Length: 334
Image: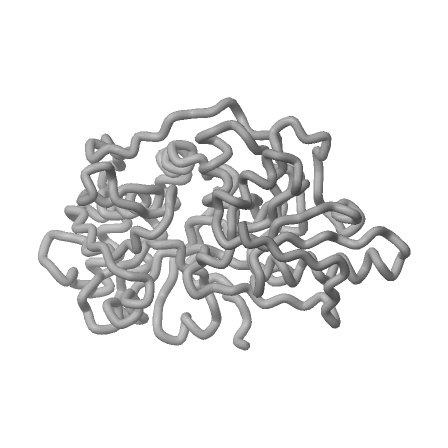
């Protein structure tokens, strides 16, 4: 099971820089959640009963009509798709429910592919999905291999030097507990005092937890007991068996798992860039003229409900936004 424990790990200061290489990394072990109104930490409702997700190749994706103003915007900008009549979108199929291969091991599915479908529909283009390793998308966008990426990319000021972005999700962290846990809310430092918390080593959520722990210890409250696991299954077992009280990590994967099995519930959410604000966005080569049209389409889908339907389809309603912004403020340069 390879578990390591610490009882009073302290860092100097509360500042925390998000790990944004892929939004969700292997180092993070399972749960999280939030909306822009909950960036400082709120307590959404508990998970619903278990639901079944369609992981087969026949997805029957939610579709959107053409959005004339978006089509006009990219025509005026001079944007030209890499392949005529198609929008070539790269997705990294590395984790459910964001991007993964269907049960046929060939078809790309997930929340990010569904968002790509809405964008392509609104622009009046055929969707051409392309899988790629996370590390390969920047060069692919820069070289003209792909028009757009929708794959859990966090907006940063450094990335904005090379790419244009249209936001479409909150980058969230969250606390998940066993579904029948007496813990109903974790929104500030005192709420974690004395708890056994699963967290990924070296992650932003660990830094947040350590800062809170320092604050609690200074006030004479009980220290957090940190729990680190090598794999998600072991972490989930610890939570369900009662050997851990809570799991603090990326929201998307944990929200999906909670909806899928009904064994855990969300009790607190925080923006992934805490104390800064982080957005997940579609990205394209800077200055190519595409991004305004993308944002127009996303806002049309938000207003029309198709966007909300996509998030609900993958258990990610807690990460929804009310507006797509072009090049919003990104996480600060390191």
